[in-house]
Structure formats: structure tokens, C-alpha cells
Image (cartoon, rainbow, N blue to C red):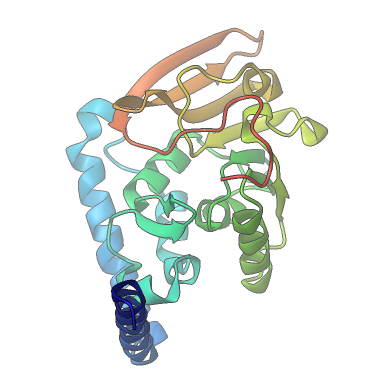
Length: 256
């Protein structure tokens, strides 16, 4: 048996044990436990909102956003071995070098959009589908795109299984938005780019809002874009953040 083979086998055994332990812990966690953990997560989100208010201008999130954050089962949107940690106020890996965003950031981005019940929203970066699930309970329709086919398909199946009927997920390069259903009342982007993609600005309805991380990898900021009724654009940097990068023009749908 070669050293490489032995090392690979050992790593496989360790991984199996980790999965088994996570599954064992998960089986002991009832819905009451998850509900209690969500409440703890929510308390941390509310506290962080207060601490960052001088930057964000949002010391208190809307009751609608808080209520939805308290109800959406985040543990359904992470790999099974991470489900015991789903309600930590931190990002978690979901595969393909991507993460599910920190709950505070999800709440902040959602709140900044000032969503209305009849809104139609475009999400760039479906990921595991958690952000779309939050949006789905606040607006009439959500369209979400992801360039990674496996993530898009997984998010769509997960959202349907959980009963989110007003979300449609597509495999596409989010840089170009989704012109088919434009214009949108709001656009939310969960990947960073140095400059805001012109197609997204064009697909934002007059009077609409977009929240998007912008800047170079080591110096990103969450940016709020507002388009006036006359079409004039204004931007405001809200908070320093760190997101994975949005695929630039020329990237092919389905490639990580």
C-alpha cells in the first residue's frame, strides 16, 4: 500500500466519521431546538445592526425582515455536516468555493432594499437559495440566477421542496442580469465586482433600489444604488464587506 493511498484512505475515514458525527448530532436536534437557535441568531443580528448603525444608517431592521429571518430554516440551506452550526451568525461553505452569507449581511441587504409586497426582485447569485427564501416571503416574485449549474439546480429543488413557489432559478452569468423579466423593482447581488454591471443598471426600474458589493477583492464595500423616477442614479457605500467575485463578461454558464 503506497503512502499516497494510505493517506487518501485515512482522509476518507476521517471525513466519514465527521459526517457520521454531524448526522448523529442532527438527529438529536428537534424543530424546537432549531427554533431556539434561530432566536439566538436573531438576537445577534439585532445587536450587530445596532453596533454598525453609524455606518449603515440601519440601527433597527424592519419588523417584516426580522419576522422572516426568524422563520426561514437556515439549516435547510447548508450541507448536512454543517447543520448543527447553521444558526451561527457567520458565513458557511456550501461547496464550489462559495458560501451562504452571514445572517446579519442577509438581513442588512434585504432591509436596505425597502421591499414592498408587490415587488418583483432579481437576485444575482442564487447560491444555496437562502437569500431567495428570505425575499420570497417579502415580495410577489423572485428571479434568481447563478452561473454554477449545480448550485442553481440545487437551490431550485430545495426552494420547491420547502414550498417557495414564487421563486424561479436560472443558470446564467449574473453580470448580464435577466432581461427576460426586466425591469425589476429591486436587484440584489451577492457577488462583488469592481464596477457595477451596466446591464443591471439598465434592468433596474425607475424608483428602484439595488444592493451590490463593489470594489477590488481586498477593498470591497456594500453599495446601495438608487434610481430616481427620472432615471438618475445615485450610490452610497454602506459597509466594508468581503464577497466572492462576480464572473466577468466572457465567463460561461455552468463553470465555477
